[in-house]
Figure (cartoon, rainbow, N blue to C red):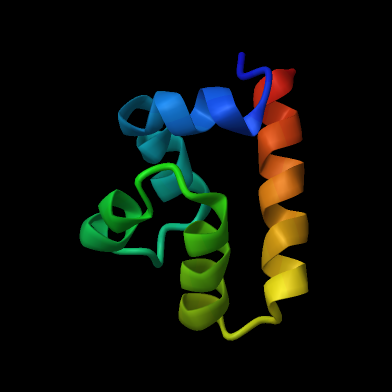
Length: 69
C-alpha cells in the first residue's frame, strides 16, 4: 500500500483512519493535528500511552511496514 512515510504524509487524510484503528486512544483532533508529521505522531502516542518516544517510533515503524504489505 504505502511505499514510504512521504506517501503516508501526502495522503494523511486517508491514512488517518488507519492511525485511529491502531492507536484508538488518540482523539480525532490529535490525529488531524499530526497532519502527516511523523515526529508529532510519535509525540502524541508517547503522551497518550505513556511510553518512551523510542517505543512510539518502533510502533510507527511496524505499522508503516504492515501498510507496505
